[in-house]
View (tube, rainbow, N blue to C red):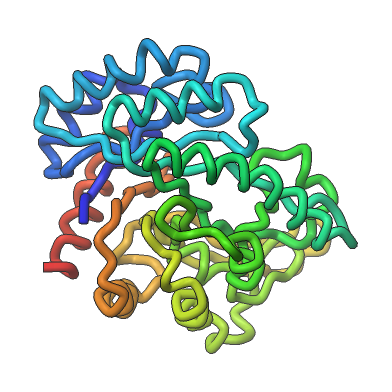
Length: 304
């Protein structure tokens, strides 16, 4: 498997600087962001993809890094530059494309949301099959308290938060060209009890529901994203109630059981790209970089 730095992690660095840091840390390559800059901390803008994606990949290749995947905001081929992005990725030898988030529209509309999403995915699937590229749907947790505004907020309530819904979206599609970009930490969060803006530790058994997700989605899991979360106790400013919330932390410090996750991946014969996305922007830049290095070292120790 290729161990990749998600370029969003070093979005304030140039491509050249990011490549130097990633190579020094020991990554195999880069998961390159090709999406709108302000919302997604991107290194390549969609409207510049035809010109700047090849340039960025050449620069990273010169540092001994591969670019087997890109992360996009594509959810429909009618989006500006969606076709250009996938076509250019093919020309650059990219094999995997993370898609954007198709949202759960509002209650009650789950079947309409799924049908609408499948219509978009069918077109993307056909194009990816033509270009021999695997598109990935990112398993991402959902907050049921804010589903009403999901359609207007970036990635707030993606349909990809439930294994059963993902199976409905993927029905009839080959995992060769449309797969699950599995995120174990989000799977653990999704399996926990959601209370208002936070979480309660009311059911520890629910934290193991990620195994059911892996079992259900196994044949479709072809890409992996790594991050982790920890619990912290917060106080509701309005009620004074104590609430358990989550925030990102290092892989060895969070609640995701990584040795068990790796064991499941080995049973699946997983050999796809692994994108490191720590999301620790609350740290200083240098501390953030150091934590990424530690996460890479920790995961390498698990898979050797």
